[in-house]
Length: 335
Image 1: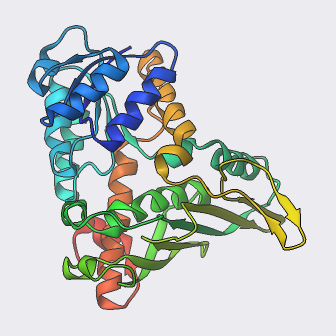
Image 2 (image 1 turned 135 degrees about the vertical axis):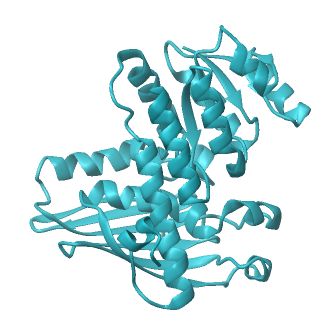
């Protein structure tokens, strides 16, 4: 499968590296208005540099990976759906639920193939947690705890275009919560603070947040987010069930432990998503290739993207108003 990469920034480079690890996948072209970024990817992976419209017209491109700024995603999905290309798009599709719905309607009407990038479902450790649930070893799931803390806050210019912490960062955790609980979320209760960088607050966002999600049956997920973890990239999940518990702990640079007269020590955590989730990115591209090749359903869909964004919108409203928000009201536009 021959790929066109749209966007050669940090996440685009991650996906370019992932394509290189997948048998049957080849990066054929890259597009980015920042010429130096495109050149770096082209040199690293031996691909052409083309503009987006040329990639859309290219017969030697089977699929595209959309890693451009969020406010371009929906337009690009529609363009490449009409061009007959399979599409992998980084989350979110858009920051507007109505725009996402319109975009997904175009995808459906054209019978286009679209996968939305929720990479954490493809992490080997998180998948092992899900496998334990599916095998019944923890019994009926009752509570999920997700801790996700970045090593440092992004720059203000990124925050301004990101849609805020709930739509940019917590959106991954919303998807993991749905996936592990096995039920849709009914209500969202969120609390946000500015504890890391006052500039983030000046932009109307939070850098520290805690959330409680509840399903209609009473299952709960607790999410803790921070834009700062002085000790590294903190990624943990725990699932409590009627018969036991399963947890995925942090990933360190090496899996060793030392001991001496001053106590026990371990190497640092992996420093950020590019290294922590390298296997997950490769796995999701591999499964995208398989789904396109076989005609099987995409493992993460446009609907998953729509629901995760609705949960993020519910969190924004909950944090602003200090109350639990029903997701159905967000989806219906009645809040």
